[in-house]
Length: 164
Image (tube, rainbow, N blue to C red; front, side, top):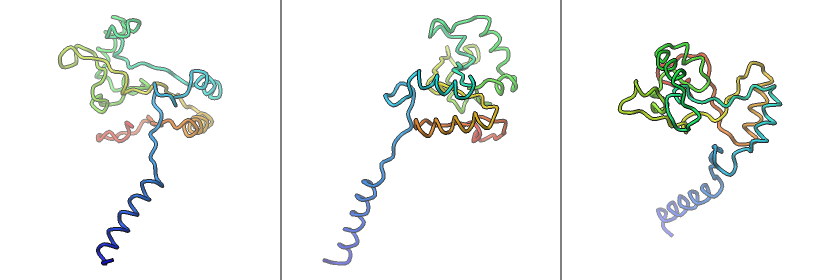
């Protein structure tokens, strides 16, 4: 066997072995079989003293889908407040620059075209962690359930790195 054939054999063997030894598993997302049940989320909520939130994007109130979300008064308030950085910073699912969420849900009057609201780019649940116990219990839960964790803080980065 020539040296080049031997090297090729080992490269292929390493590649096959590495792919067998390492299987990347995606984190669970809402709607998949491995996503925690409502009962499991309720247990987490009790563990963290009711700090689990299920918020909707603020501009969802401007859209009729789902029908229960539409509110002209809330939509007007959202539209008027959209350029206020405090309004966005105080919202648990909003980010400073909506383009980091692909403009997934912005008020229709500010959107190109008719606008739309796709909640798939927003977190299903948010923990309003105000104590170290909230943080520890949430991280433990996320590791056990293989859920992606995103931290929203007060940092500032024009490149969007603090956003996710």
